[in-house]
Amino acid sequence: MSEIKEQAKKCGVLGCTGMVGQRFLTLLSRHPSFKVFKIGASSRSAGKPYEKACKWKLSEALDANISKLVVSECKPENFQGCDIIFSGLDSDVAGEIESSFRSAGFAVFSNAKNYRMDPSVPLVVPLVNADHIDSVANQKARYGGYIVTNANCSTTGLVLPLKALMDAFGVLKSISVVTLQAISGAGYPGVPSLDIIDNVVPFIDGEEEKIETETRKILGTFDGVQFLDAPGTNVSAHCNRVPVLDGHLSCISVSFETKSKPSIAEISRAFEKYVPLPCEMECYSAPSSSIRVLEGVDRPQPRLDRYAENGFAVTVGRVRKDTVFDVRFVALVHNTILGAAGSSILNAEIAERKGLL
Image (cartoon, rainbow, N blue to C red; front, side, top):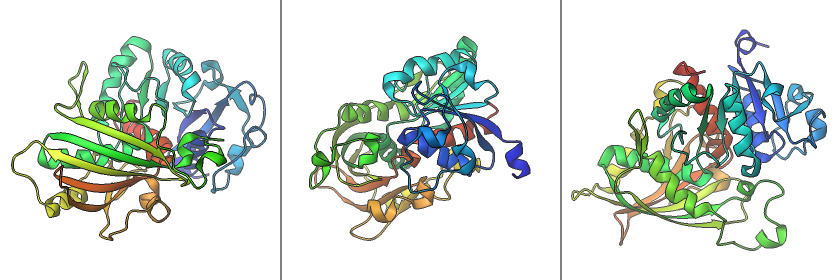
């Protein structure tokens, strides 16, 4: 163990046996300044070594040290000594559990949906609105601890290129997005094989509403007291589940409010030149390029492009004029890395750099 790892922040992972929990453990196992200290799951798994409690589903091997950790119930008293709590809990149980950890003084970085639209809780896509993390001071004063949420996986793949366009060209008037979402986004065991093999399911419960509401909060501002939605931004979403293992693809069309419309070349340059705060702060997980623009007429593709920048970048392609909107393009995000656990970890890295841990 390196000297850096010995001095690392001690992390607890809630919901450690699920798909997002497994991704948390994989990413944290090789992190230079965060280390897994405690793991939690339901009472069915509590008391068992992790290797006995979990059906490991990722292609990456389970870390040998983590495999021997004993699973605890998700109660604050079982996580004493942790500097950071990461939550991969299912939304059915996340609300009460995360609240109890916040009240016990913990910094909670959650992938669950429960607190995303809470007016006191920041909804942070780290490569888009990292400054919203500053708002946790208000929670700390009230509760002793705080919760930071990351967005829905498809929302994450949408708002990163939108933020680059907003910064370069101003208010986005209308946005249409059609998603093709991987089956891992449904967790395990997920979508039954008879429903998804040789098929596309044109409905994901609650997904369209999440994209339409979360986007406005993420692209908005924090004025020191409250979060203000992005002005004039209308989003229409249609979501589909497709037989792909990992990687959410979105077909996006955008209209600008400005009368002087940018050219396709200017739009592509805006994507390529976009540099978010975590990159400026040189956070460990921050990609060298947060938006990768591909020129091929048939890219991005999930199988070829989902691991761009180790899964921490959004890949954009097919940038072209639209006959109804001003521009259309395709964006791809790895739904369990940047779209889930990776965003929570990067949010914690930002909080550490800001002295909030």
